[in-house]
Image 1 (cartoon, rainbow, N blue to C red):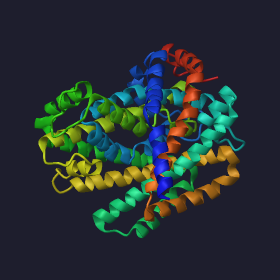
Image 2: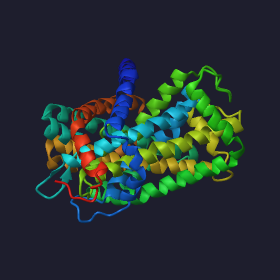
Image 3: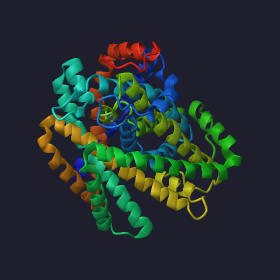
Image 4: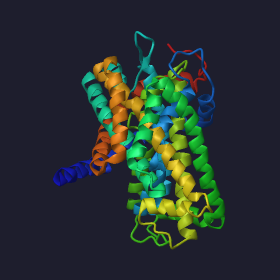
Length: 450
């Protein structure tokens, strides 16, 4: 078992090495350029995300689809993951994470566009879409669509289920001495109450939970930044200098280089916002929207909120806290995050605890939908109930088991998901250009699609 675990770690490291980072970041840059910087329309996109489009066909509102995607995307990686990037790559990693989010907006936009363009309506009126349908209908590559669905179904039980449940159980045990068994029981019951109602139930809960958890966490970050206000100028300076120069990072950082800052910052940004992985377009296909570009814009705001806002705030909190309190242990991501939030008198640890629990639970809900649609593509609706029951059981299992091996498998499956999705994005780039020019740059956003 130890040999197998070591092999899994090597495969994961290989899949998430420089080739994958270059492929994902290269796709972000390529799509940004050929689509004429859709990032310019981010405020229009935010407005559309909270505008109901009831006349359009779809299963849930555009905001419901966005909230579900954000629920799956914003997770513990936004908190502990950014801290890990800072610990390994130095303060400069924060800027690279942020830049990855800025350019990743174009990729998330493109995924949302293809999701609507190639979605299908079932006999009962349900909307289905995602990379598997773009590969099958747009490129006639059903074999690659099947592979994407398999990778998604497997990855969902790892990164979107068991490891999230495990994070909650460990936190509850360490903070409140609460039994992992009871955490598993409560978490499984809560998950069952939501996912058994399908996408509408998931979207409704996420539509309430996501704004709450985001505002709650952001307010916590702002309080810390206010406490560290005297050090913000130095924090910005340190982040920029460490990202582009070989100058000593300061603040106790030793041995970090430009390459290390770029590697860990870019990798964390790519992994946290999931732009290019192909997960978010699965739920984007269920949105009520009159044309593909409207939903594409709404989808793009997911990366904006996740990385450009939340990850950037987290990074600034961490770096300013290190400067303000040089005694903080910044060599371990989890310890660094905990130390930074402990500086909020009385309630700091509670803010961090509630943030991680809500982030992790919402990820369980969002990824349940991704996995469900992947399984349905592979075997039809008859598998959905069995899948949901297995998902609920896995939540309990994740709460009580040691999951060191699962992390490596899940990371590998996430990387393998990205490859078919990127094939669809790159080979269908002409479709992306045509639809974007028609609806976005010719001012026809309010027109109904073909």
